[in-house]
Length: 101
Image 1 (tube, one colour):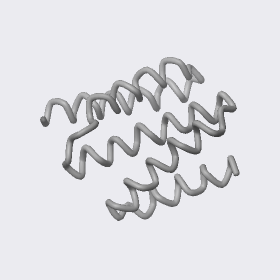
Image 2 (tube, helix red, strand yellow):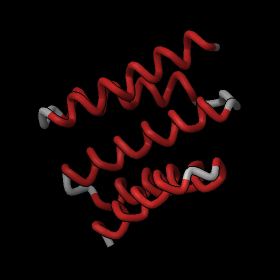
Image 3 (tube, helix red, strand yellow):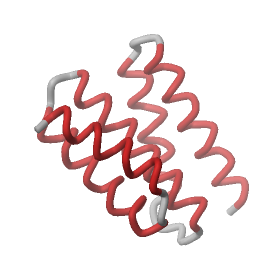
């Protein structure tokens, strides 16, 4: 499991990098790979990475002006972050939701 989590962390960081260079397709690919590899894992670390991947996917959807999809991703991330007690990340996602409302 640790290797799966490390690979997912690499994928979420790669998604962020691709997003920084406005390569939204590449970013989406890495974020989706991270999400796919982490679904069903029950550790807090894995759940936090799922939330990160969902947040990136929400940002990509927002950039593509698919606001309904962005909202779905952000709300999923928000649920996980609240459950984990990640207040700073929760605030970031709430801010992102506010931008699309």
